Image (cartoon, rainbow, N blue to C red; front, top):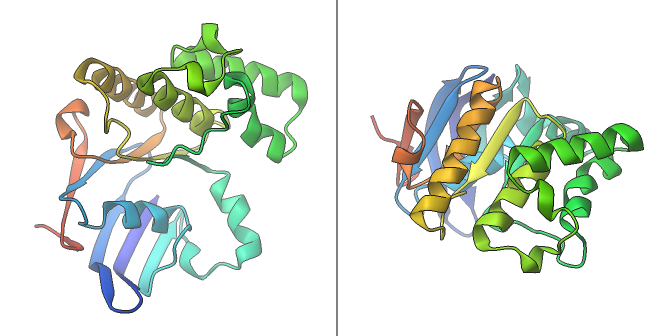
Length: 215
C-alpha cells in the first residue's frame, strides 16, 4: 500500500530530515514509527499525506507516485487518509459534533448519512454523550479522541497519527492506544509516530535515527 524508494527530504538552507529511506507497508498493517526527537518521524508522515514532497526518491501510495502529483489532485488522494496531527486544529467555536462533521461537509457528503457517520465515530471513541459540548470543555484525552473521531469519520483506508499519546496520562494513553488497535483490527492500515511503542502491541516497528532507517 505504501512504498518509499530511496527517499530524501531536505529543507533550506541546509537541513536534512530524511536520508535514503526505503521501506514498504502492506495493506492492513499496524506500523509504529519510532525514534528520537528530530529523527524524521513527522516528516515521514507528512510525505505519505502529500503535505510535503520528497527532495528525491519516490513515495508511492497504492502504486501512485504522490510526490509528483499535480496540486489539484492532492485533495482526492487525502480523502483516503485520516490524520491525527500533534496540532489537532480543533475548532473551539464549534461543537464536538460539528468538528467531526466538518470533513464530510467539505466533500459534500449526503447530510442524513453524514449525521449517522458522525455519531458512529463519536460512539467509537467514547464521546457520544459529549456531542453538544465545545472542545474547550473537554479534557486533553477527550480532545485527542475528538481528533481521532474527525480523522476516521470518512472511513479512510489509511490512518496516520503523529504522537497521539503525547502529554496524556498513562491510563488515557492506554485508552487511545486501544482505539487505534480497534481500527487496525477492522482492516484499516495504521501508521503511528510515537515514543510509546508498548501501547501498540503487535505493531511492526520502523525506527529512525537522524533521518535514516536504523537496521
